[in-house]
Image (cartoon, rainbow, N blue to C red; front, side, top):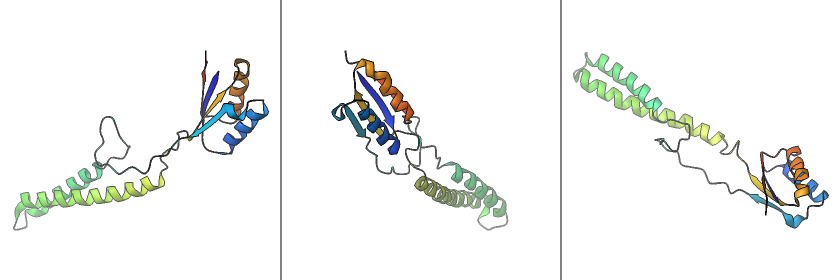
Length: 154
């Protein structure tokens, strides 16, 4: 029988493995597999329906661009180039300013945020006899496993 559990890489993981060995589980029957962390992902401007990082890079440019176009069109009545050209220039300059501000704010947030705050770091697989399975599960629960699964081998 196999018991599979996920842990954060911490001292609780080490203590759980030590307690399993003290209960008579051989070290060869315990496999701890650290999950590979992917490198930092590039900041994407557009979110898709299947992938979203929760940070929208188009809200700020839309808001600031709208404000810029309204101000440009309003002030453009007194300028020689007129309200339409002034409004379009205000839209472009406001959208660019909004994008730069949004990118700077989200860049700092992304640097501070850990990629896997809620995910598991290590998968532990324990091969044991069926009568040991409940003890193994109790040990893993006691040492704060994030998730536990049971797989019968036969």
